[in-house]
Image 1 (cartoon, rainbow, N blue to C red):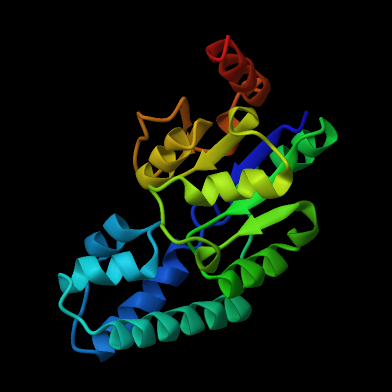
Image 2 (tube, one colour; image 1 turned 90 degrees about the vertical axis):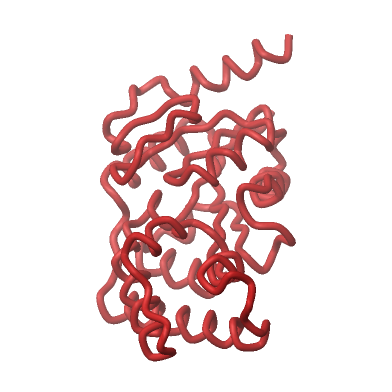
Amino acid sequence: MVKAVLWDLDGTLVDSADLHWQAWRGVMAEEGRPITHDQFVQSFGKRNDLILAGWFGGEADPDYTRRLSEEKESRFRALVRACGIEPLPGVRDWVARLHAEGWRHAIATSAPRLNLEAMADAMQMRHVFGAAVAAEDVTCGKPDPEVFLLAASRLGAEPHRSIVVEDAPTGIEAGARAGMRTIGVSLMHTLPAADVYVGTLPELPADTFDTLLAMAARGRD
């Protein structure tokens, strides 16, 4: 049976926060609607339509917010190409180790597909992932479980044999709602709802994924 690891992208596989902050800050300032860094942090990991609805209070025209979203993402990709982007500590080691142990990998992100592809190419890791789910592929963003359920399905994995790795509370909630075990990885905030929480991937015990899989199996008995 397939066992799968479903990776969030921004903040989990790569530290893209500063590039996103630069892009959002520039776009919103030019629109005369400057945002604070705290507003940005609170929105991180959500889809752009939800982010802008929160900042505008639902008052903005959909065509206007779509234009802002497209401009922001275009700037973000330009920054990725100009600055490059590296996987976070432990990513390459864990992906290689789990692959050798027979795990399949997917990216499950709220980011647009062009962003996903730009970052995967910049990391030189696109070949590692057997599937990828982006914002365009789902109707509902995290914390809805759709993104993780679709990613598992594309790998041929059952939810109870899929482990979610996330850096945001909304992602942890989405993974739990999908019926999956979750690993929270973040130095920005603690993630008490995750089955396992660490600040960085190198802190994870070597048997973490197998242990969570065994827990999920026991929970079905």
